[in-house]
Image (cartoon, rainbow, N blue to C red; front, top):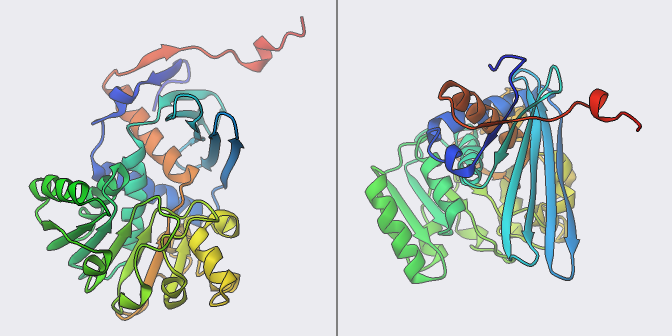
Length: 336
């Protein structure tokens, strides 16, 4: 922990990249969700949209009292640059002083992947050996790398609509992981017989048929952060024990669950409990080998703060970053 007299540390995306292993991200994020399960405050994302130029400004926050940190993301996507930029402020939860300001781009797939892995570890069968990944972008890569640290997968099937993308992704991961990784020609081929399914797409429509899920499968879904987006169909939600990252966001932007409610196959009473409740042991996770489970990960300040604080402490130990100064309100708000 930094001394109270230290200034605020600015960490570039390059300084954050490679600073921690997937296992370290997972450990930090799991601890963050444990605290959430025992009452740590966290707020769902807020999103402001702009029509011309088209873009969105998004933010979310959390306080992790035992970690001693609070903060969250603010990010802009689209607009004139047609890109995304992530700013991550981190504060001390005891004193309120700013600990760090991080360029959050490079850590995003790692902290999001770690969240998915915590979901897999909490809800998938211990003997899970086959994994299906639908998607081939940065988030899919982060999910796969992290999931492979909490289960010993023997085979991984990759599907995304563009053959070149899925084949390139599979070839890259086949060199990285101990498991055999192969691209397949359809989502059905990937999902059939899989013990764990990860969806990491930006699809507005279901990416597989819930009827093909085997009993006992766990599904982690990453594209459920808009009411009109539902990677998972109503049948998957109907069959599953449903666990979101934050209960409060479900009826606002968890598109798959909202769609299943609209189709009349589930209600809000079918929300089993938050991931933090499961991690903290407040709510049971998987209760049988035949149970289908879903973890709906839309993104929260919990993993963001947990990962940022872990990186901050590692950066302090390695003398990384640049000191910057913020004036406290008692000095800056002079009224003159």
